[in-house]
Length: 362
Image (cartoon, rainbow, N blue to C red; front, side):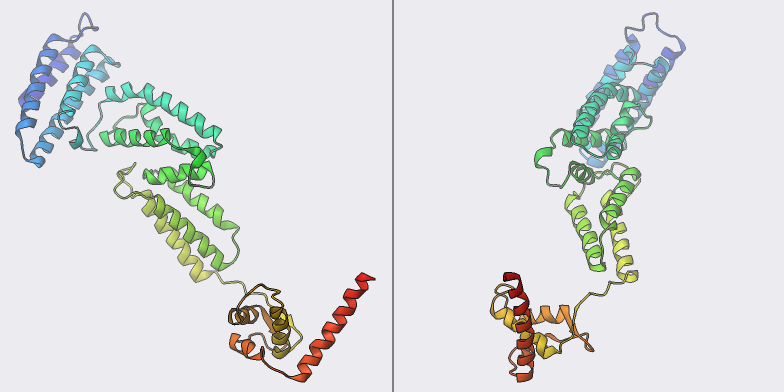
């Protein structure tokens, strides 16, 4: 088998050395050897039962055929008839067991060219939709990169790059922007890209800055921690386990974002101080405060709130001169006191307030 593959390569080298008189027609020897090799490879694939042996066999043969195809393509600089013969051979072999193609199998440069125009048309369509939806233009540019690799016919693309882009393209095709489970179309696209494991550095940095913008104007240590926790929750919800990486040499975008969010949470917890809670400072003692609020409670001024949580709210938000902290139990016990001096003090205050109210009615 290796001899036949090498023989096919020698025919390709002869074609380069002696250009055909009619380049529109494929070389006859190349055609004959391609057909013979096709039958031999398919026969071996159908007879090898061990998965590992079959996978190794096919990967080696496809890799060699890709190299021969590239030799002819680089010489012709276009999709010549001879190049097409090799592409057809590769397609036939690939279809024998299509689910077993290794992601790192190199794509023929000629195949990338055949896909270039199609991907360009697809991206122009998706770009128009994203712009009409008001998606952040910077994010649109970042989301174009997977398409641009094929549009610009980059070298050294692999089968995994192609299948990843096809899956991404399909997701873009069926996004329901009117009912996306996000606050904005920009967030909907971020969600889609996290779900597709688009772990390109530019997208990772964009997500970091987006989270920083969300948390920048949040005041209070507890609120900032809560906002980071929400972002962490959204990333986890968008993550799809087992999704192939866009960049096989980098960690998943979810892992990178979750690690970064955790570092931000740790920093806030360690170094940021919670601003002290501002309380209402009364000139009264705790007995007067408790009695006054008990009167309001009995008239359901705060709704039907039970006394115990009501006492907790008073303790959390009120203090008196010389006593900054009250225990809820202290407030609760003072609800039931009958100190005449306290009652007279509150009566005098309420009478004075009533006089002021009546002035507005005159």
